[in-house]
Every structure is written in structure tokens, then in C-alpha cells.
Amino acid sequence: MGLSSGEAPNTIAGMAKYAAAFIEALGLKQVDLLGFSLGGTVVQQLTLDRPDLVRRLILAGTGPGAGDGIQPPKPEVFQVAGKPVGGPEDFLYLFFEQTETSMAVGRAYLSRLEKREGPREPVVKPETMKAQLSAIAAWGKGEGAAYPRLGEIKQPVLVANGSNDIMIPTVNSFIMAQRLPNAQLIIYPDSGHGFLFQYADLFVEHALLFLRQKGTQW
Image 1 (cartoon, rainbow, N blue to C red):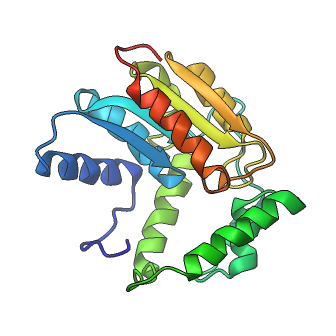
Image 2: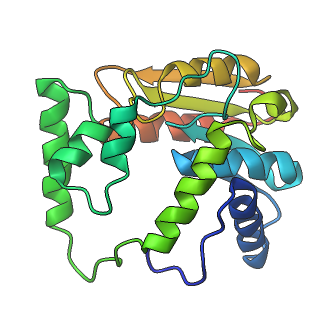
Image 3: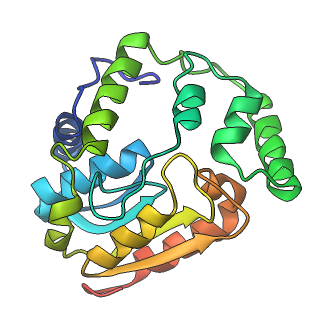
């Protein structure tokens, strides 16, 4: 993806394996991980596979896969998210709450992106999108998903989401936080999947507060 070379695996387990290999290639013995959306599934799997590598974990706008009470996105969300190239209105629909205040912040975010200087990353290749969608679909069906194994994640975890995430329904964050042994949940008001764009400064403050704690408790 982006400027990375190679091919994307078509399973979450494969992505987690690549992530662990990248961490080790950097010579790092232990890291704090932030996983957003699809990235959140990858870091859950990585933590289960290699708990020795992970000190603290932030799961943002993500879910643990199929399980009791877990809700999938509505069909219309898949229709918009599955477009090869989405427009600004698609982005606003998927990432921000459908209120005047949230939409205004979303448009300001898009405006800032337009001011970016320097070369842009290439559009994600169709093959990569297909691999990602395959991995997400399997995880959503419970194939190799983290849901039944969340109790094995002993590290401190910060679970965060918007109050109305339509990409990965917010209720899934509540369920995930309840099943993790050492988790705290933060829900940001009047926001959706892109809550960390909408509340960038506040989210950073919360993340730093969490990461600066010492020991194995939140």
C-alpha cells in the first residue's frame, strides 16, 4: 500500500506476520502499537501471535471479528466503501457523522489534505484492494478472528471509537473492551469512523496519557 513494495497478503494473519517481521527488521524488541480500522485487526492478531513484541495497544475504530453481539456494517456502507475510487462525499459519509458540526470538520480535513505539498502516494492497486477485502470478509465471518481469544491479550489496551461508526459499528468497541482483561474505552461524541481526524488533538492527548503509564495496568 502507498509507497510500500511487495504484495499485500489476503489474510489478517499474513498481514500480522509481515508487521512482526518489519518490527524485528528494525531491531526493536518491544513496541507500542496503534491499529486503526483494518490496522486494528492486524495488531490484534500480531499481539496474539507475538505477545513478547507488544507493550501497549491502541485499537481505534476496529473490531474483533464475528461473535456474540458483534454487528456488521449495513449493506449500503459496503457499496460506498467498495468503490475503486471514492469522492469527497463518499469519504464524508464513511468517516464522519451526518451532522452539520461533524461534516464541517470533515470538509476542513479534506481541505487540509489538498494543501499537502510534495508527491502523493499512488492509488492502492486493485490487487491490493481485493486482498484487503478478502481478509476483512474472512475476519468478519469469524475465520481466524480475535473475538474468541481476546481474553489472551493481557497488555493494557485503549479502545477508542466515534459515537456512530458506520464502518465498524460502535457497539463492537463496547463488546471488545468488555472482553479484553485490561482495557479502557473512550467514545468521542458526534463522530464516526474518522473520530481521530475529527478530534485529532484530543485523541493524541488521550493516546499519550495511555502510553506514558508505567507497568501492566492502564
